[in-house]
Image 1: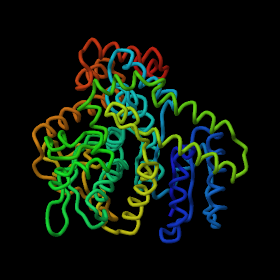
Image 2 (image 1 turned 45 degrees about the horizontal axis):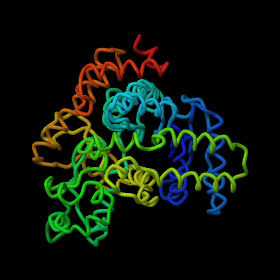
Image 3 (image 1 turned 90 degrees about the vertical axis):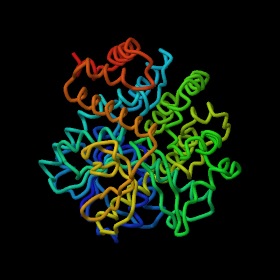
Length: 446
C-alpha cells in the first residue's frame, strides 16, 4: 500500500508518522511519500521523523518530494493537511476583522471564509491530480476549513474525499471520562458541520447518560466544554456544543478577550514556528527534542481566546489535543482493514441530517469500512441548531462558489450572510481588507 502525505513538511506530521510506526505491518505499508511545496520544511520534518525512528528502534522508510505528480502517482490513500498562505495568511485572517470589531479566528467567521477562498483552488488542483494519477485513491482531508474543503473537492472525487477533524472525538473522549466510562463503551449522537456541531445524546446499554451529566456541575467543571459554556447554558441547550460554538454563543466576549491579549494566536504561532523551522540541519535527536518543546508551547495555547473570555485561567492539556494522529489512523485502518468502526467524519449527508440535502457535507457518526463512510441517521435536531446549520451551509456553499469563480460579489455575500458579521458594509470592508493584504486574492479577485 502507498500512502501520500500532502503537506508533508507540516508541524503535525510527526504525530502521524509515530502512529504509523506502530501500525505499518498491520496495514502492509510499502511506500510513504511526504510532499510539500517547500523543500526546506520537508528536510526539517524529515529529521524529526528520523529522530522518532531512532527512538522507537524501528525505522519506517519514507521519501520526500516537491513534485505532486510523483507523490500522487499510483497512491492508495492521501492524507492532506496544508495551509495555503502559511501562518502569515492566518495572521491576516485574524487581524483584518478584529480591526473592525469582528471575531478574528482561524476557521470560524470571516477568517474561515478567507482561509477557504485561498485554500479551495489549491485543493481542487490536488483533487484533479488524484483523479488523473490515482483515480482509485481515497483523500483523507484534514485541511481547514475541513467541511468546506471536503465539499468542494467532492465535485471532483465524489465520496472518495472524506474530511476529518479531531475536535468531535476529543469532546466524546472528555465526556466519557466525565461520566466515568471508556469511550468505546458508549454511543454518541453528534451532528452538525465542521467546527459547528452538538453532542445531543450519550448512551450505554442501560440508557441515556447526558441528562445526568448536565445536572452535575462538579462533573461539568471537570472538562473543557463544561467550563467554557457553564452548566446553566448547557442545561438550556440540553446538549454539549463543540468548543468552536463558543465563538457564536459568546462572540462579543471573545472579541474583547482577543483584543486584550498582547498578540493573537496566529501571530504567536508564526514566530514560534519560524524559530523551529529556522534550525534546519540539526541531527535527528536534537530536531525531535526541538519539535516536542515547540509542540508543548503550541498546544497549551489552543483555544486560549475562548478560555480567556470564559474566565478559565488554566492551560490546555496537551494530551487533550493529541487526536490528530489517532483520527488519521482510525480512518485509514477502518478503510484498509474493513473494521466497520464508528467514527465522526465529514462526508456527504445522504439522509443523515434532515435539515440539509443529500449532497451537503456534514459532520456526523459514520460506519467506516472498505467502501468508505456510511453516515448514520441523526433524526430530528433542535430548531435553533438546525437553523444555524442550514444558514452556515449556505455560507459555505457561497464561499466555495466565490473561490472557484473569483467573484467579489459572492465573497461579500458569504461574509455578509455569516451571523458573526454585523452588516453588509462591514463585510465589504473585511473583504477589501483581505484583498489589500493578500496578493493571492488580488490575483483571484481582479
